Length: 603
Image 1 (cartoon, one colour):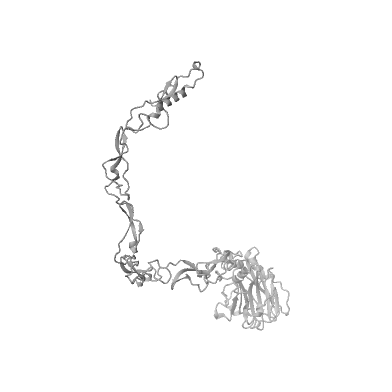
Image 2: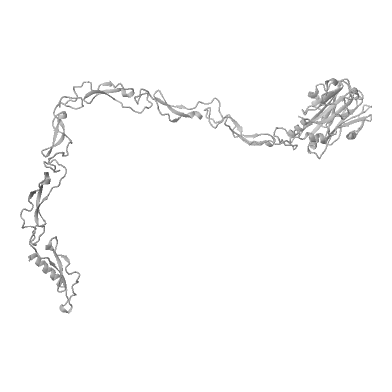
């Protein structure tokens, strides 16, 4: 047995056996049956000489080495003498595997109990080492190389590339040759392309634009004219950059600001003579439009228009408030809502929105609910005598000294038969309206029917006369040859003095005048829509039946027929806020007649 293994076994035996405490009095426990015979390790390293199995000796588990064997050619120390395969000569010697290159040479090794030839170098990439590394039968073929290298010499003779020769890389350069136009020193004389004198000279490529200018260069061994500038996108510089024969075409025109106010500020960049300029898109308008822009480029917006100011659209109940705004037509307009008109009513409101109030709607009520009365009284002594004209409301018959006529709401003419008017006589006028009828009551409160008398040419200028324009005063009055009387709201009569006997130059006049400080428009409507008529007829006209008491024979004023102009004269006020006159042609004779009517204008 190997002395080294014997000493290790004895040492291990002592290690397991020294663990007792007094001999047989405390015997060791029996060995675990499941561990007996399992492998164990005697020392470091591999091989059977360091391996063993656990054995139970005196109830102690002891690692016993394996038995030594005869040395075999297997790479192990079978006889445990510290040597491996020592009895087999030739191990490690080179051997031939029968292949090519490095793949054909091997090394003799022990394997499976015998000496075999084992390949040492595997097939790999070809190297520049004089060996067939890729085992294809060729040596150093395709070995990496080709790097530029320099050796002593001029031109191409001093510059080469590394090549693998005889298992080593060597710098191999070209041999001198005839000079070619290629930018190299082919003849190795230290000069390049020296035989080509035109190289570098300016030339024309015959291309358009910037591609036309060039220089002579070598290309493909020949002298050629190479352009200095390559084709590019066209931009604004006055040159043909894209070499198409056109200058500064198709230049983009992005938006820009001209620096001008208003609509003149917007522009586009345009190329002019090789320079980009911001050109305005719009020309200023001759006059500013109402559109929220500065059209005339003066720095002001819509300055001609009254934007934001208050305004009213429509009249009467249609009137609505708004403010001025711009329209699509470029002007300003009031944006107030439009309210449709309604049917006109007699309510002091402009219902049909035509600017007039109560037109035609109230006149019929006034005619039906108001009475107009005119009276005459005699004063033979030439002094004004007290006269109670109230009886005129009963339309009293003539009694020789007094006569009256009162309308009955039928719009017919009423006759006042009179003798010759003399100085001191009186005419009288009064208006009585139904207080329960609103239009009639309004008419009596706000309107006056005025009766006038003029002598000695005082009224020759007719209703435009300034004398008549001053007539009447609140109730009645006399100014020179002019005398007036006016109705009032208390249903009483006012007297009109006859200052001289009636003659050809005398005139009778009448007018309707209305005033309402709170609603002048309504007062004007009443004045316009209600008419008072006064007429005069000769005895012959009366006797011939041309004028009948209470009849419509007088027709429309001023006269119904030109054939009886000298027999019948009349007029009707027309709401013009002026007096209308009735002249006497031959003086006033007895049994002649005056007439009155209150009417509603049809228009």
